[in-house]
Image (cartoon, rainbow, N blue to C red; front, side):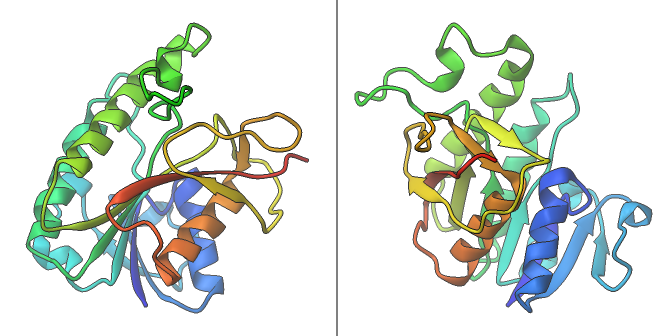
Amino acid sequence: MKVGIIGATGKAGSLILKETLERGHEVTAIVRNAAKLQNESVAVLEKDIFALKAEDVNQFDVVVNAYGAAPGQEHLHVDAGRVLIEALIGAPETRLIVVGGAGSLFVDEAKTTRVMDTPDFPKEYYPTALNQGKNLADLQNSTDIKWTFISPAAFFNPEGKRTGSYTKGKDHILVNPQGQSYVSYADFAIAVLDEIESPQHINERFTLVSEAE
C-alpha cells in the first residue's frame, strides 16, 4: 500500500514510519523539513501540513496524521485537521488515520465526563487534549471522507518496549491487567499498521492499552 505519514520525524511518526517500512509498504514522509528525516531511503513530500491539497494526498491509499502542535499553538491541531478534511473530500479513495490523544476518552458509561475533565488531569496537557478533541468532533461531523482517530492510553510512553500485543476499546479509557492506562509508542505503531492493513474502524475512534514493562 502507499502510505503518507505527516510528522514522520516526530516521536510517534518515526515509529509509525519504521513499522510501515518493516511491513513492506511504499512510504512517503510528508514533512516540512526533509533535512530532519534520518532515513534517506524514504520518499519525501516536503510540504507544510497547512498547504496540503487533494492533489497531494490522492496518490496515497492512507495518510497518517502524526502532526504535533508546539506548546502555545495547540489550536493548530484543529486548523491542520480541517485542512486535511478539505483535502480528503477531494481524494475520496484516500483514508485518513489520526494519531489522537487520550484526553477526549470518557471515564463513565454515560459519556458525560472525559479524561481531560477530571480533576487530576495535568493542566499543561489540557490545551492539546482540548484541541485534539475538537479535531475528533470535526471528523465525526464530516461527510464524504474515510477516517480513523486512534487515542492512546493515558500514559503514552515514547521509551516503552514493543510487546507486540494490545487490547482495543472504543471511546472509554482502558487499563491493563496491572491497572494502568498505558501504551508504548511502539505498540501504538503496531495498532496503526494493523488498522491500515485490516480496517476495523472506518469513521470512528478507537483506543488501545498494552502491558507495561
